[in-house]
Image (cartoon, rainbow, N blue to C red):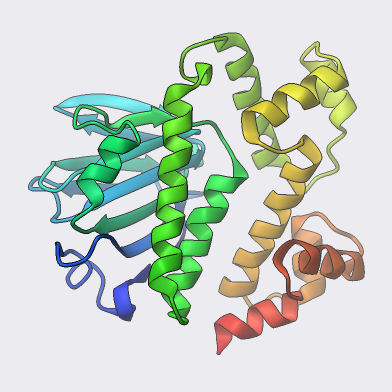
Amino acid sequence: MYTDSAYWHNKTPDIDDNFEDNSVPLIVSSCGVYRMYTRQKLLTYRPRGRLDYQLLYVVSGRAHFYFNGVKEIVPAGNMIIYRPGEMQHYYYCGSDKAEVHWMHFTGASVRGMLEKYGLTDDVHTIYVGTSMEYKRLFQQALQELKLCKEDYEEVLANNLQNLLIGVHRAISSKLQGDNQVKRKEMDEAVHYFHMNYNKAINIEEYAESIHMSVRWFIRNFREYTGTTPAQYIVSLRIFNAQTLLKSTDYNITEIASIVGYDNPFYFSRLFRKQSGETPSEYRKKFRT
């Protein structure tokens, strides 16, 4: 299992991060990520809920949630919202290969903001699609909370608002209910890329395997995720390289190989193009 998290002003998790504050419009108090590989089960059970709001995003695999006592298996591409005082009962399994990003927030304007973006009190699960942009917003929030640079509170608030705008657009679009066959095909493509991102994936061969022309597949994939298949795979590789740079002692050449690049110099150039800094600079920033 891999986990990474950050908390408001670097305070103690599960104690100081669980608070309600209506003196300001919006505070993102904590966020993080779980990736399940081998651990059998990771359970969260809060019978009285929390004081704040929580937004979760299932990036890959699936997760198991209970709403009003009824179990719901939530696949990748869904966001889940919890409100203050709501019972929280959910778990992840290693066999499901779940990757879930989460964020807690509070503030005087939250309730009105949720209503504005279509998240009424009866809504818990929202299908938004599998997009690297959602994942990037969660990851950026995690980095901002860790580094606490100037104006980071505003960056966090903007990240959350952009996530909620994405949710609102998904609720308003035909993606929510139309063309279930196309949605299933794109879900399967995203899952395949997540499982094989570090291998040589031939887009033409994959499109042919699902009986779809390359042009049609790329068009549908882009509509579904907001990016092309090739760009999606590169984003997966760079994101996982960032995780390895932060959490392991592998050198740059080893990390390049792990995420699918035989040439470490090409990997470094691509990493810099994607993230704005070299792998060494990225690692040094987190180590210091």
